[in-house]
View 1: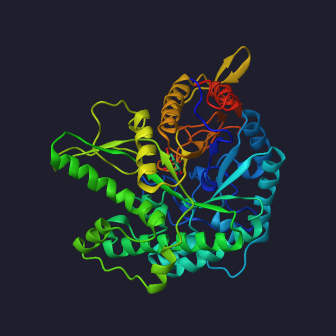
View 2: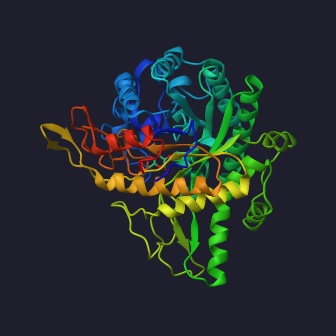
View 3: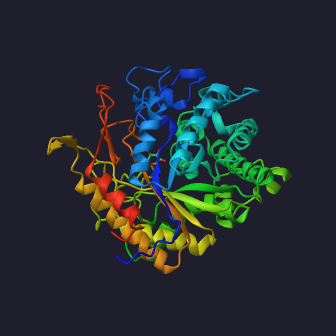
Length: 467
Ligand code: BG6
């Protein structure tokens, strides 16, 4: 295609500390909630870390970061998204002072990125609340988390603020609705969590996000802070107005998070939800002021679209971690995630129309089982299915840019194979780089380039012209 991607478009890949660093207790790191979630969100957490938890070793990025970043550079990455392990910096979350060894690790990562001219994109909190904050405070249900998070973010801005321009406050902040432990560090089991506590936790995260946005701007007006949402276009299952309304209401659940981040206050439909659920939020005057610190850009993950129906008997499907009714017109991945490239163009247009803020796609990709084979004596994976998936999605991204959407960049999820968030498997692979590690923990941790490695390299080199 003739490329529509603007000059300087930030092509790259995305990761999260808990899913690939490993080294779970190295150099003073404290435990995070992920260290007791060996099965992701499909089974309850354990009391203590257990050997079957693949995240404890991950893919050992902690010790192999230089080699991995060199591979990203070989693909031509312009940006690399990674998160900082909160409990690497503040082992218990509520410590007064940070762990210098943890801070030094990210200095080294930034050194490597700089060496290769790759722009860092940092998530401050990606599903890795320090375990102590979960145990002692029940995570974000407690207002004190706002202060702990602010102290943590301030430490990061002061240390890395001259080297990192783009920051994301909370990964998929709306995921807390469905996965309160993973996204909110809340140990109270989901079924027992009251709506009052859930919405109060949401409020605390939103205030924390706004506060650190202000802080970043105060420390350095050039810093760009974004929110990060799970984007999931929701279509009515039929043209019945009741289904259309049901779809709109489902979208509102997600829009609320972006609306607060972009408009600085709660929208009316959200307040209605609170009223109808008997929730009385504790919002201080200071909170209201804090929320006015809106983000510079909106980032999001995109994997699936879903349908919604007003009929109570419609079977719920399995889209990302958010549920929804399956769309009869779409095919699904091996994990049941429905594949909808056009949905990405729809989301881009919707978000741009709604918020008029630059957008950033910071996750997209296909989780699939890969087979390592030998081609001309070289070990690789012939992952045409992944190339096909990404090509179709990126084609739609190009169309959205032609529609007038302001898009900063695109980072594929799990540019190197890592541990899945929802199921904690390694066999659910997203990468351009295969990592030899299996679900039972065996493997050499060697890296191999997949066929998609060269494909993506070409896409970047031609700024989307090869799509
Ligand atoms: C997003 C998360 O939900 O999707 C990532 O931000 C996650 O952490 C990604 O890995 C893919 O989901 P999964 O469950 O296949 O790893």
